[in-house]
Image (cartoon, rainbow, N blue to C red; front, side, top):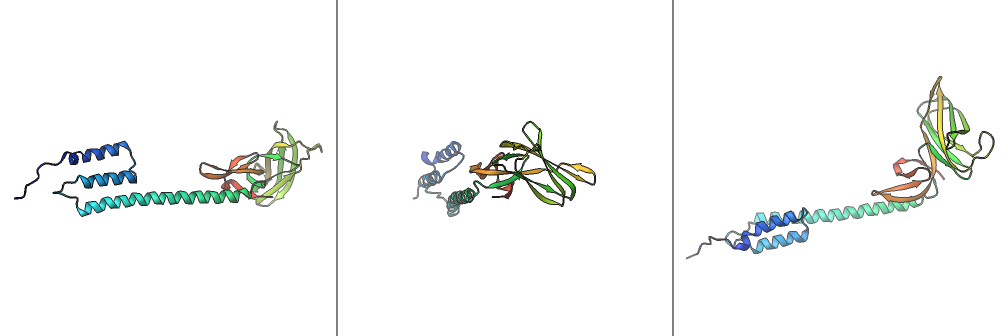
Length: 223
C-alpha cells in the first residue's frame, strides 16, 4: 500500500517565507542570490508534487534574462568608456586652439581679440563696440554694410586714443542699422581651449573666458 503524504516538511513550509524575506532584504536580485534560491527550492520541493517542467524552465528563462541584461549593461558601459576615451583623445588635439562660442566677454591676449556676429538679414551698417570692465568704450570697429551670414571681426588692442590696451577681458557689443531701425545682434567670441575634461559623463572643453562648454556650443574652431 502506498502511503499518502499529508504533511509538508517544515523546511518546505518556510521556503516561501525565506524567499519573501530575501526580496525584502534587497530590491535587486543578483545572479548568485537567484541560483541559491533556485537550488534551495529544488532541494526542498514536495516529492509528491515536484516542480512542473514549464515552471522550472520559466525560472531558468528569468535567470537567463537577468544574465543577459547584466552582460548587455557591461557591454554598454564598455562602449561608453571607449567612446569617451576616443573623444578625450580627439579633444586633446584642440588644446591651444581658438574656439568660437556664444558670449559677450572676450580675452585680449598677445594683442589679439576676436569674435563674430551672425546676421539674419542684410544691414546698412554694423558696429562693434569694445568696452572695458567698467563699461567704458575703449574702441569701435566699423564693419559697414553687411550681407546675411556670420561676420568675423578682430581687434589688435589699439584703443580709440591710439594707445595699446592692457591684456584682460573686454565686453563685446554689436549694433546694426537696417532701414533706419537699430538692433543689437548677439555676439560670439573666440577663447583658447585650455583643457578638456569629462563632466557628468560628457566631454567638455575649458575655454578661456567662457568656462566649460560642450562640443555643441562650439560654433567654429580656429588656429
